[in-house]
Image 1 (cartoon, rainbow, N blue to C red):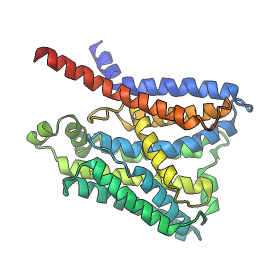
Image 2: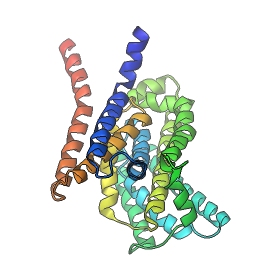
Image 3: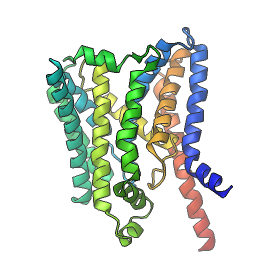
Length: 326
């Protein structure tokens, strides 16, 4: 019985995010003119995975008790880069995809190096690097344009056997290839430990610096995958500053909704994915119910504020308990 209670305590945030997503999606499809159909699911999935990839990137950094305010700009930068180089024959397209992913890795590695070896606060460092990444994106695409390999885009934004959205299948593959090995590795355990108590992790001889560097680097990779998919969905690249900021803020909301502690050491990308899907579905609900577009940012801002407040509430309770014994 105690094992089940422990498991539930660990997965409570993920289960809550899953429940919210299912509830919101049922309401959404019940009120959608087309109802529950393959096209509706595909469209929702294609929009949801964009935020899911950025939320996964944010989660890796948050687990180490950091925060990455540049993930949205890496997302934009790789979108603009993909619109230049993911073109041509299959070989050239493959090289372009590799180039985009390497660019994301490089951005994440730069963030990690500045935070770890430059000893700057993550919030300050990533605001600065995010501005640099946006500047590069603007140089690549001062105006919206470009293209992408349409055959590859059609495959990755379509459906498998006419039922399962390919984007969701790709998301599952990324979880299995990136998150599962990392979370079960020494570096993954060190990332969790440093988020819980960096001093204790250091005294235990855990590779804290390498774990943090790996977390930031993989965050850049995941944001780049999101940027690739944005290019596949839109067939173009665009350096939209408001969009980059929105994805950064929404990724934080998705992380908290998914049960990941903003103070580090607790949660998983699975919860963040469900949090992202739930948050995106809330936006779809506003559209279905014909909510005034002028009020939509306000409503989403309130959701973000509530999500962050819920994430902080647990720490406040712990601090109060410590004060009781003080």
